[in-house]
Image (tube, rainbow, N blue to C red; front, side, top):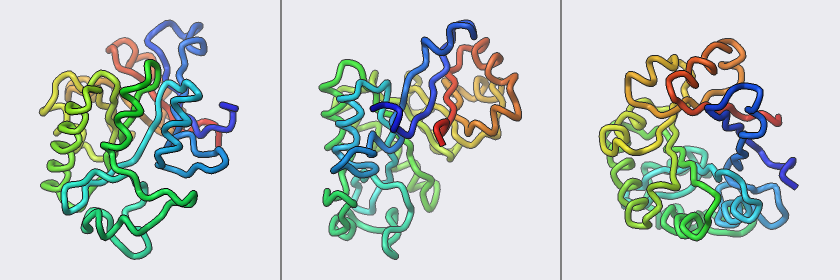
Length: 224
């Protein structure tokens, strides 16, 4: 069943000969390739938990009324997500008929699991104040749910990543952009890199260097 997942590979900090045994599967936008599920849905996260995946990855935006909503694209049917209220967005249904889920509806699924982590991709927002507000709200919800040790954060926005690092020194934060070397990431306080496989093919030495520095290494999306 797991072979149908859209996955990322977590490369361990152990020697390369044992990497495969230490690799974890992350369900990209949840484990949604199951009948009755959809990307970034409640069911896709629950499916990832049920499949005992290492992680369930989701995409989130902050709405104008302070809600953290799961959605990948910045615009839904002509409506810009980060410039809309959740009420304006809630009428849009996912392909399986679910309403757009909120982060605080997803966190209990992770709290109840003893094996699956939540990987939250905070999407680039329309301006830096909105990104800062998004980080603050997400950290608040995660702390309230008591799942700080079960959540990892990723983003293409270095501003978002570094705001998390400044706000919570214990947070696990990985950069998606692919433009920073392991040494640069370590210096800025990141705990890992999360790059497209093309980046690591072009810079294979980064894997070993990241391991030397104690950084996690994630590569996406490997089964396409």
